[in-house]
Length: 285
Image 1: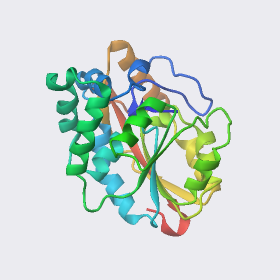
Image 2 (image 1 turned 180 degrees about the vertical axis):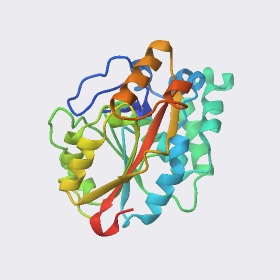
Image 3 (image 1 turned 90 degrees about the vertical axis):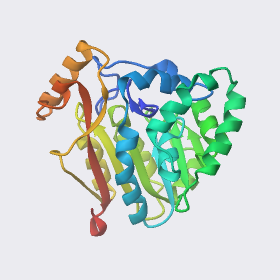
Image 4 (image 1 turned 60 degrees about the vertical axis):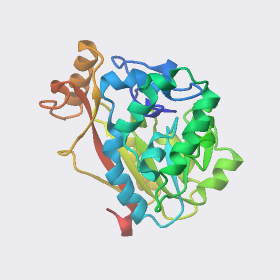
């Protein structure tokens, strides 16, 4: 379970509905999600104008401000990009420029990590919130922790039916907000149920999900834990360009199959997402 919509927020590569399994037709980027540092990730996604982490920040900042305290848990967090944008005065465009700069291409991962630690520390926001990350990409998680983007990290896959580790169960007792930028193409109700079973405080969920998959099974799961989900399907957020015509055909057909009109969105050349926000019934957004 990685934010592939990226393992850090890019469902650039995983797919599926509630039944698990990869959705045919989507490009795969498995080789960039678990490197020692994020340079390959940014080099690969730059030409595709992958942008959803930046698009999500307004909603995430609002949800973080409205949460009942506690930690933000970013699902499919990979290199900690959502945490970088949430807690630091930096844009996604600046990160693309930083990690694709020829000046850093010759650095070792350890050398880059030293530079990144100083870079993020110098841009830390006064209103930064504690962020933990969940992903299967252990190397990416180590990078995110080493440079100070994540306060805690969990390399666990809950999709296969495994229970959260003792450490993750304990961490869930203080989670006030769960965020997601695309992993809805791969994650199912299994992950959410496994996490919410251990929730210790009222929490919210803020998820950007591609229009090529249904969020309904997850929304139903959240409802069983007392969370009401709302969305505005007329407002969409672009995720990235398609890799080729075949991927575009897949997205157009998948969106139509779910009752969405691809005109001006998928038909115009990009994956689009919808924001789903969930909160306790008495605090619903």
